[in-house]
Image 1 (cartoon, rainbow, N blue to C red):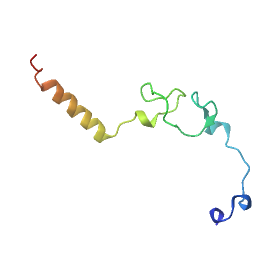
Image 2: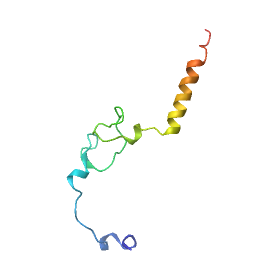
Image 3: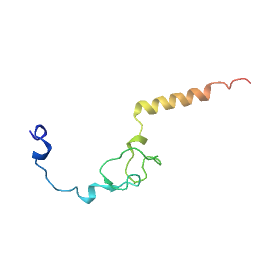
Image 4: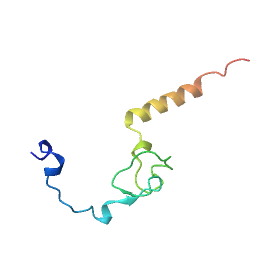
Length: 80
C-alpha cells in the first residue's frame, strides 16, 4: 500500500491538475480546487465565483430561521 511506504519511496503521478478544474482564489492568490471558506459570500457565490458551501443552508437550518423570524414578529415589544 502506498501510504505505508516512506514518502521518498511512494509513486507520484507527476501530473498537475488541468486548468479547467481549478480557479484562482482572490484570498489565497493561487489555484485551488475547492472553497476554503474564508471569504464573505455574496448570495450563494464566493469572491472567486464558485458556489460557497458556507453560504448554503440545509432544510433544518432554514426551518429554524423561519421559526425564529416568525416568533420574533409575533412577540410584543418590551415596555420601556
